[in-house]
Image 1 (cartoon, rainbow, N blue to C red):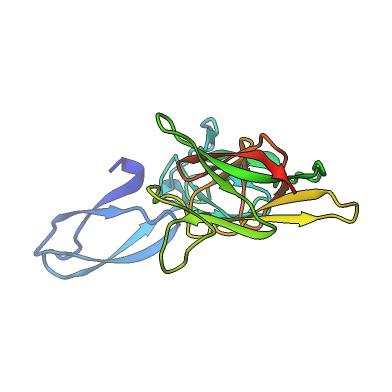
Image 2: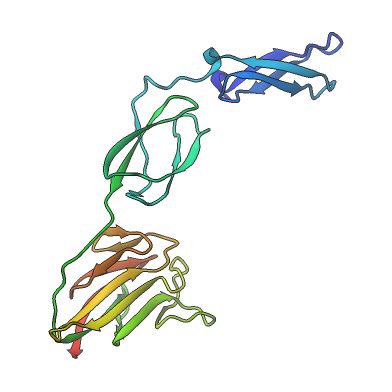
Length: 233
């Protein structure tokens, strides 16, 4: 424990006078501290001068992924004493100050992925699970909503994936529909994601949607999938 994180006091009981190490509460004020040796209540004062000051240090970039409008955990890497859930209001590089040690944190915030264009076509599609060292496994899509998720006999998905516990149950939905001009479209939607869902290397949050085009790649947990052309619809 560093000096800024603690203070050494002497018990006020004349018959005890033991040295006590008191943790810094990271806020000024007077605090009651009970001596563990004699039980005497000591009053310890922490002043603003006792507070750690990392304001002159360079900002430390956090590794966590942040998306506009989605909550993410911020934890101060300077003091390790401050953490909170934070919802970024805008995209870009943001600097956030720690109220406990005045250290600065840098986060990179991405916009929600919005893929609004898609190709109308006459073909149905299929999801191909890419397996290194094994034959790929194909899952033809049907008209309507197709769910993809971890295999679970209690809550089965249309496309159930075995062997990857990092995939959520019923993680994503793929809606297959037909437009007014008879073209077929495919819409990808994140339903539940304990781990980040990647779509063409972009992170999608829960409820994010993307229109699919043949050749697109998405990742659920540790498993990669490719969206491919199947048969005439």
